[in-house]
Length: 194
Image (cartoon, helix red, strand yellow):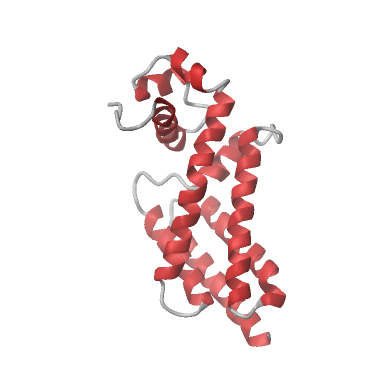
């Protein structure tokens, strides 16, 4: 059922987001999005030039809420930067135990568009991953790890994205917890050598 409080464009993006995340971008037709939003296909094309533009809007909508969630989990975890980063991984593992969890929407979309590097959604996904890395780099700078902040941020992102992939493959969120322990150990090792 359509939410009348949302603008038509927002209803379209909301419907597309639910479908794209649960079923994948290639599996979902514009007709399915129109039906879920309670509008006509023509209305979608009034607001979006193409399905590609709608896919890009889906990822844009995920960007800031995902980063805000990571920041919240970081802030809510007790301890130093290593503990707090591990807390992000542990919260992700908890989220991955939910039956509707389908992994990282940015990574799943990039896998579906791997042969289209110039696609607007690929650019949005890359920008999101850079923002996460930049945030982590700032976290490590604030923790007096400035000399290692960029390297630690990149290593943490690799552990994060690797755990998303392996959890999807095995359907075992404990891989995310193991990645969190690895990030914790890396950060502590850098702190000890600083």
